[in-house]
Image (cartoon, rainbow, N blue to C red; front, side, top):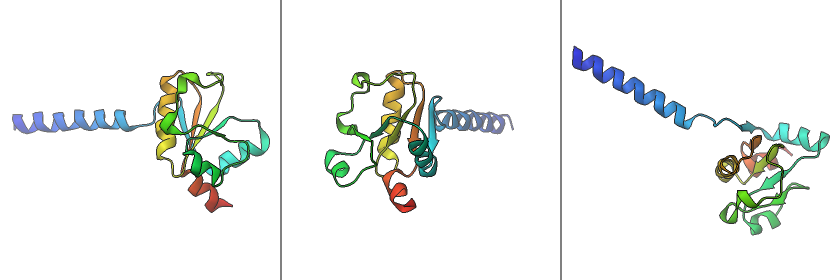
Amino acid sequence: MNKISLFVGTLAVIAIFIFVITSEKDGIMKIDVETLQNKLENEEITLLDVREVSEYDGGHIEGSVNAPLSSLDAEQLPYPKDEPIYVICRSGNRSAQAASQLQDAGYTEIYDVSGGMMAWEASE
């Protein structure tokens, strides 16, 4: 019985650890494309498109800045680190990676667009 309790306790600790590691990092918020559209219509925002140049050239959101993840140096971006920054890619994977890099570089208010350009195009 003691071994079972120890095993269950260990599993609980592991589960909590996994939850903490995989949960949203502070400072990175997920938003949907409708929220992004509203922001674009009502505010002047910084929107980084982290797809490759060829993808960006194939179609992008007006006003977005191409900053490919493959060459992204978040430390060298010319944007204030205490102002909101929005990140989009094709599906949401690369933007999540870029958002983490931005956070590591000291950006404090990062919005990762869920579903990326695929969701954007589907909503039009």
